[in-house]
Amino acid sequence: MTTLQLPAVVEPARLTAALRRGGVLDAGAVREVKVLHQRDTLVSHIVRLGLRYVGESAGAPHSLILKTANSAFAEKLANGGRREVEYYTQLTPSMPPGLVPSCFDGHFDEDSLAWHLLLEDLTDSHDVAAAWPLPPSRDQAIAIVTTLARWHAAWWDHPGLGDSVGTFASPEDSAERMETFAGHYDRFADYLGDRLSEERRTLYRRLIDQSDRLSQRYHSRRHLSITHGDAHVWNFLLPRAGVADTVRIFDFDLWSINVPTHDLAYMMAMHWYPERRQALERALLNLYHDTLIDSGITGYTRGALDRDYRWAVLWQITRPVWQWSINIPPVIWWNNLERAMAAVDDLGCEELL
Image (tube, rainbow, N blue to C red; front, side):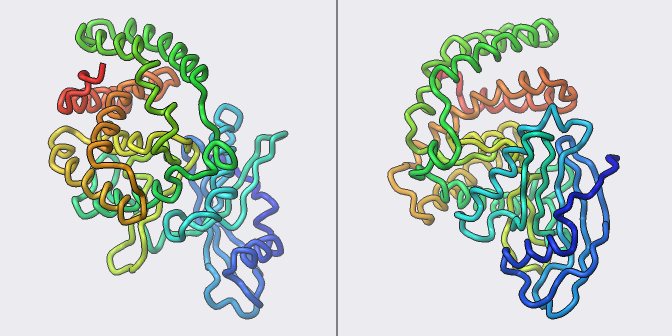
């Protein structure tokens, strides 16, 4: 585990100022801060902080989550920290409440690549749907997809996209990325040998060859939003039994402007085996579209959602190759490959080529 020197933001005076800015502390002040628990993830180091106050502190949080860079990967994965700090500090203030954890402080230092986020602690009130790799129950999946749709709707064709919010990739950017992918794919295919069938090799080559045409959907800049980029169900926190609260989305180091169905395809086609996906997929797509309409989105038909979903499922076959290229373990990328390919077959996505 990372040995962490706590940043200055957790000093009582700094915490007091941050909580007052966040509107959760009035006359009182933070008196004492202690580490309750800490753990590493691939990208970050997570510390649960306990707080004690002096003076009036009704409604102030008694614990917070401090998220910092995992020192073992701080330089290699610095852009993830940069993007997550950007998301929480620049985007969340403009969002409807109750979709993501509240952020009280965040900073990324371009010189040292050190960063931190000071977030609402939902440990006692929320939990993930199930331990990885178990899928959620039907009711949990409904709650998760409803929240994802509301989150997408908040940024759907927002006038700030590509200007004050994120950046658009140009056609040249997309072509360069696909050229890089093609090199990874050739090595991936050589590595797998006869474990990658001729039919799948043909599918990959056709996708690469037609990527410019397929990318026109993104470059139309219509019906786009902020996407999570890693929207598996374990990046959603659901209220515990008896807790009246909303589902929250977390971990935003891969957010971008994109076609929103990428998140749905990644969640269901990439991570759910065929039986579970087939049992829930249609109903969840209906729910997603209904929630968009209820959130005020117009001009996006149910048929357009189906077309975008199949398009996004097809693109998911590129994910395992990217994962293999950065040394993600086979237990992840191999299963992702098999599930994505099954979804491509089920939904007839090859027709798009």
